[in-house]
Length: 78
Image (cartoon, rainbow, N blue to C red):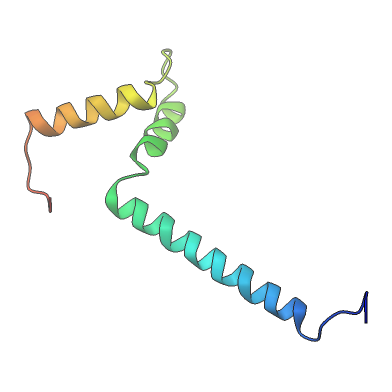
């Protein structure tokens, strides 16, 4: 029986890939809701705006983001 395929093994792999893809999609959605993709959006905007200066590093971006939230408090869930 060596070298023989188990019946349905490709279906099981396809099902597992579908579950993994679904989980990744949900994780991206949840990250978007929580604001985790803000730096990625910033980089896309910076590239599209064609500014002549390099973008902030991720650390600089989050520090600036937090400072702005502290100096301009707005209603938010947490």
